[in-house]
Length: 343
Ligand SMILES: NC(=O)c1ccc[n+]([C@@H]2O[C@H](COP(=O)([O-])OP(=O)(O)OC[C@H]3O[C@@H](n4cnc5c(N)ncnc54)[C@H](O)[C@@H]3O)[C@@H](O)[C@H]2O)c1
Ligand SMILES: [Zn+2]
Image 1 (cartoon, rainbow, N blue to C red):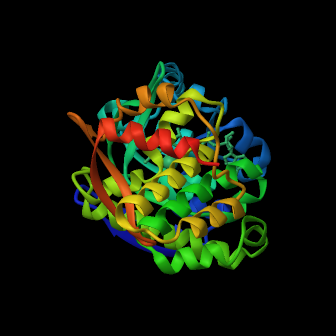
Image 2: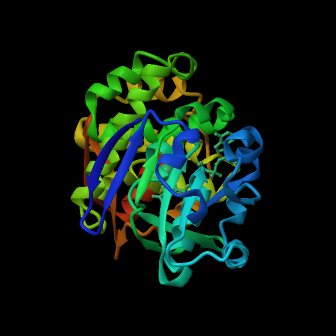
Image 3: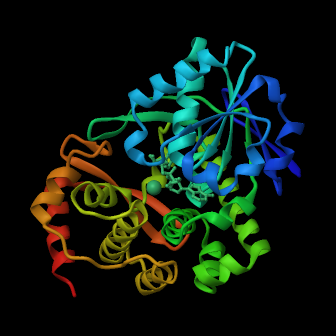
């Protein structure tokens, strides 16, 4: 187990790499800890939860809601959790978002940490301190920015992760490479999902590098005033597609990255669109899908990144260099139409 401390303005986060869930007792007192996890993770790794207080939730985004928060709070009261208690979210992004949120409001805030179990949670959701829940169709509508006390990485947990969840994680890893890290893009294009699943040490290095990348961005811009916006690469069109079609988050973001890459070629002379598409495919993700422009545009124009009639779009000046380009909303519709007509 190796420890690294990331200092954010509000609090330090201790990050443990190369750890095993069985070592969690070295970090927190079992009597004071309550683990929050979901049924999939609990059933795949049951022995590792032995002798811990555990709250097991139903899996899925549809449970990232207030009603689940109430259920958790009722169970915490049942466990007689107090201000000295520590909540530990062992799970994907749904569990980490929920755990951070509940820990931030229970008795006006108690300590919490995460053991991310999905690749997406390892490289993205557990980092940065954003916690919260969905309200109706509005994702992450309610929440708080508060850093966990610790992040604990046990990558052996990934052995039970379904393939489509691996691809979701890689969509974010490819995103990080595109906006911030050209050498990592080269590593990714030199290998593939299947190969990395076999090469544990290379995968571990990649996870660490992504933790470093996202933490670095968050540290510089904890309250999302500037650089943190780059992390939305692929997500503007991605979110709009995800709400209108039956796509996973990774699939939608992949399509969003291809559109942003195409637009970068057109507006900024970005040269690596075909490399981007090949890399996306190597991780089980799609690069093209026809959509109804009108329908998608109506959602897209309501995006949080819109300021009046202009959208702050994340494009690539080159691989490894994301930039924010203001694009008039009307022009964006024209670009979407043109892109959608391509074969
Ligand atoms: N807070 C942030 O900054 C941030 C950033 C990105 C995403 N998110 C949130 O994260 C969520 C998505 O995260 P996710 O993709 O991890 O979703 P998730 O938590 O729903 O996990 C995906 C699926 O994989 C299963 N799973 C997770 N780990 C497993 C394992 N080791 N073995 C077997 N099954 C496992 C889960 O049970 C679930 O069915 C969304 O709610 C999103 O809003 C938050
Ligand atoms: Zn994402």
